Image 1 (spheres, one colour):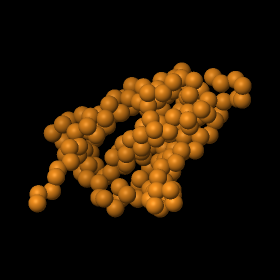
Image 2 (cartoon, rainbow, N blue to C red):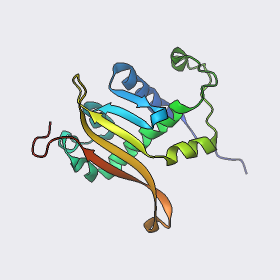
Image 3 (cartoon, rainbow, N blue to C red):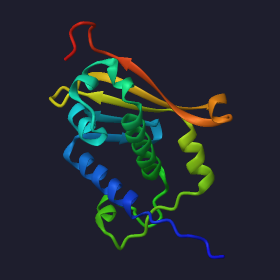
Amino acid sequence: MAKKKTNLQPWLDYFKMLQRYEQKGFLEIKPQEHEAYVTRAALLTLAGIDAEDVQSAAVSQQPEALADTLSRLRAYAAYRSAPAVGQQHPVDMNDPAAPLPAIPEAELTAYLSQPFAVHIVKEDYPHDLLLTLLLQQKRSWRTAWRTVDTIEVIDYTEKGNPT
């Protein structure tokens, strides 16, 4: 029986969109540090959540949309951390003919198993921190000891005075 091929085009399209976010200054990925900085407006667009949820720690009440967005940002950081086989220059990343980076499965699994921090910042300069969302994989007995992503919220806004 032939192995079913996975269509990676949706992921590549999503990564191209995140690359545009980086070019416009809405997103900064630091793959080696396992962290990303994203503006509040960009997070609203990516996760489809309300502004009130981003301005307070209530963002943790939106686990589905938020966890999906954080997982995708972590996957993009893993993609960016891969040794560039054919893409030696950032300009090559815009060239569809340039080969994609090859990511060995063991390295990808190791990268994705480490904690990943997404720092939400204000849109205006200086980009003050609003929240840090820490995505971690933990084993849970509720899922038959499989790993699940958990989100820890660190709120930097003053209590009663969200900005």
